[in-house]
Image (cartoon, rainbow, N blue to C red; front, side, top):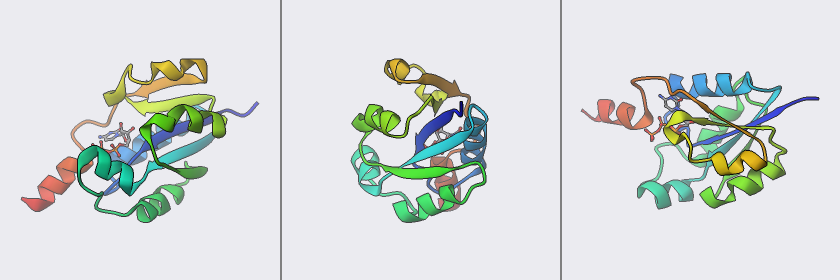
Length: 130
Ligand code: CTP
């Protein structure tokens, strides 16, 4: 039986921390489906749009060897629905979210992976700005 892994993120200003979590997520199953958050969701959450548009962010994520399919994550509240829709066997999240998605444990296995230290989109933007 093949195992489908689902993960979510913004993946703005794509960096090696993004690549590593996607590669590690894929290793938890046979197929990796990635929910890329929409521009509108980011504006609502952070008060600013991502640097790259949702089409560009999805194009980059979809081109990776470890990614089998992508979809837009339009609302944080729809996670359960997306997990069922994409037949997730495993939900992978970075451990910055540890414990926050345990409620989906009745739909699929929930795995939190350690983040790559010392890099984030926010830090990259700040470094370039300085
Ligand atoms: N991630 C990671 N290691 C990092 C940065 C991100 O493993 N150093 C993971 C996150 O845990 C998440 C996914 O990559 O599962 C997408 O994260 P995202 O929020 O898009 O990236 P960040 O770099 O954390 O962005 P920001 O600084 O805007 O929060």
